Length: 387
Ligand SMILES: [Ca+2]
Image (cartoon, rainbow, N blue to C red; front, side):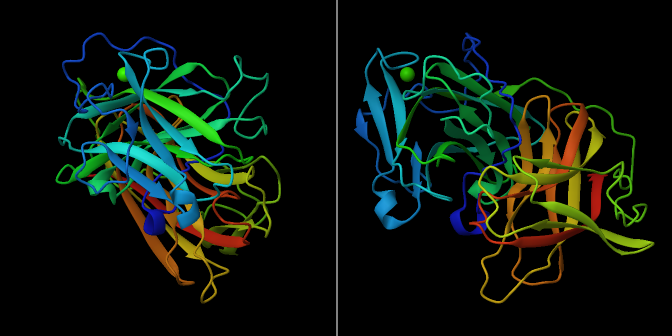
């Protein structure tokens, strides 16, 4: 979601249709637990106010004033509702929450360079059915609650890692992902957000056992140097459509189109999203890249806002690197484009917590662009080993 304006809660995508929620029990060994009071047992029951950035549990409410006061975070003292112990946390948003309005709770922690971390939390959508409807997915249009579990580096102002999950039933689900600290000199915000529904509804989600732990992992050898992206400037492409190593796909609709711009030897790719594209629709350009565990990479590309106009709302381009095996996104994720019509370079650092195949991508989402037409061009992708 909007980084510059709203700071938080990447709505990473509508692309993860199949859920990988885990129902495994919590770890018995919590000796490496880094979150303070992860089960909320020491928290006074009742409403939690919005806080500053130095609170034990940081609470943020984002949105219009009339919405903010109805975004509720509360500690629930009820053994029947808690996942563990007596207490859990509830997050609620009203039906008329839209776009970039959401509530967030988390902790800011100083993490160590060269370590791998596992973030996890148990979540439960109390208003959901006992069983998920057949075929339910992020683009199926079924009733759902959308929960984000993310970290944001650089004291809450840098790049992201994490995942959005669509909950379709009222069971407890454990969300998990792994990451490395790309900016260890500053604190990293580890947080959960409850996001607006694609179909508006009053929504309440319970949280419990919100944990962060260091994981034993050593870096693999990475012998490559230089840019590991193939056809990084699209100069091997022809004007009649995108071909490997690049791919393009529409999700949830077909109104977003891809084109090849420029002339032979100087190509770029253009994504065009018409006005009024629905919240359920997205489209993505990507290339698979093979990464080594624990290695730090520097990633960049150039993006041009082609239909830039003075005073127009800057589009949000979903940009980063995605791990399909764990459904986790890393990078700027919701990149608000700079307010000009020039080519601008967008960079991020990535420490791969998994070896093997990753997807370097740029995606346009109907969701988050408020029905506006967006045309952007992409060029010169790089991924190099940081030395
Ligand atoms: Ca608890």
